[in-house]
Image (cartoon, rainbow, N blue to C red; front, side):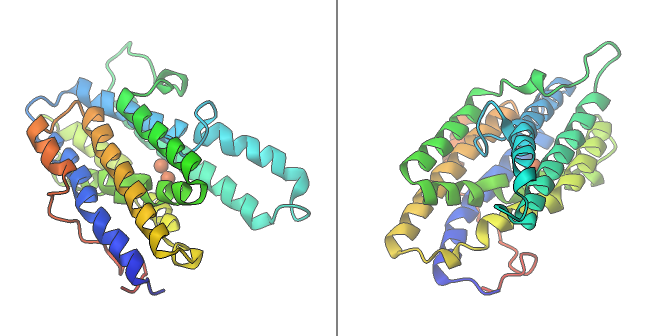
Length: 270
Ligand SMILES: [Fe+2]
Ligand SMILES: [Fe+2]
């Protein structure tokens, strides 16, 4: 599939911010303040995202209960009101996100000491302020621009999967003080990476078919970049702030070396 010049522009505009998010993880992995506690903290927060959804779904339902209820409501309407493939897609989304929750929750539990409580969805229901800010920004965008806000939210979902791609690289660093944690994190990230790359593509595919005007492309870019910046702030807080305020400012100004979008893996022709 070939992509329009406008979509390529949107991808190019996002690339320095995707790189910025990756910078948080790379800095954290080798950070002198990284401990078992900071590892468990970010893993629990990640579980919160995988089950409650950070603005991808209504806050009280999240991305487990939301689709589960949709499935129950859809059942009597299959192929009378709702196409069976649309229902299958809801089921697949539920399965995928819960599998991600399990992957990170397993890593969290594997890093526990005897007597420490097992992770539960309720335990991670209260996420952290910077993640709530991202959710609120996404809800506000969807309220102000129902179509473009939703598009921007899908486009920014997962932040080009850099947590998972950077986490997978830890498989090469399984000796030393963080060796065991690195192995667990790499394993969890490997389980999630391909799914989330697909979810990101879903946010991209179809954008060209929307028939957006030049002005709408501009709005979509503005909303997307606002969300991507909020993602970087959310990630830095999730990982106990490994980026110094000065470095964070640079990253938020879009001064990272842009990440190279893999058009081949995405099966998109630029
Ligand atoms: Fe996920
Ligand atoms: Fe996802």
